[in-house]
Length: 326
Image 1 (cartoon, helix red, strand yellow):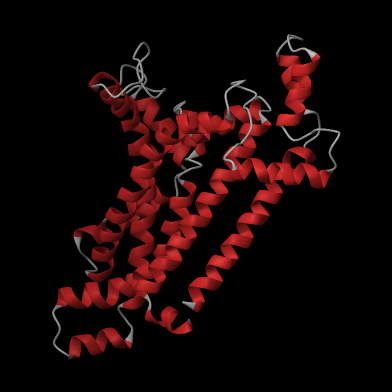
Image 2: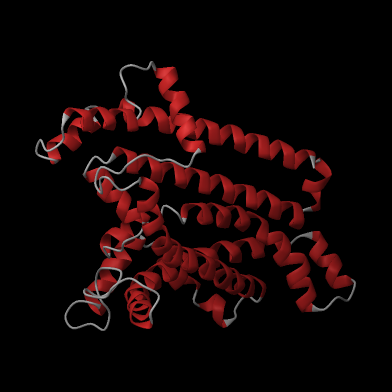
């Protein structure tokens, strides 16, 4: 329990630090974000509207930096992330609510599937050296080194362009109204297949490679020899002794992958023009939409912290030595 409380305290402090950095981030960027919005509106905003924008963005000159910081914290506690400049006057929270399901559906599902499938194949490849899984390790090593976006470009070239069976961009067909009817669901699934396959192939190869290497290391430990000497079945030794201990380093990597799901695979979403959080971040940076950039960075940071806390809880279950520290 002491270990868990220390970790929770550490993550709370880190969350406060991330929020503070997120507050100062737009204030360190050269230029005035409100003036950038005014120039895009071609002078259609009156004086009161401009004044309101400065207040909403926390840049009110009537407040010192500490008062602005206190107001910013108050906005966060109320769930107010400000207004998006790109989609003005839509709140940032609504923009995120529209893009998050796309990223969670694409990157989240492929991350979970690739981890479990890659870990399972890695266990087999490392335990039964010379099996069919182990024989394809050179190809796995090659695929794990290929960046997602480059594999995406190759997939578009051969499977989308020149009359390929898959669409090359977008989240659904033009003219389809987003709703929960079968036409939209099928169109969304169809558009996600190619980027999902791209992410799955590359990320699964990495999990296979890392788990195989850990299984090779663990299989030479003394406790594996003792387990065999006790007459335990091969399956039990592999799962309960070897795989359980070899899995620990992968848990940290998986937790980090879960946290980065919210950020999406940025370049993949850009390559496929997929309407997820990563593509929104790319558009927000290009259009100097500082409130949206702030909101996305904050959500990504908090997601990584929650995912790492989840990893610590898994460690408590898998590693008895961690429990003894408390």
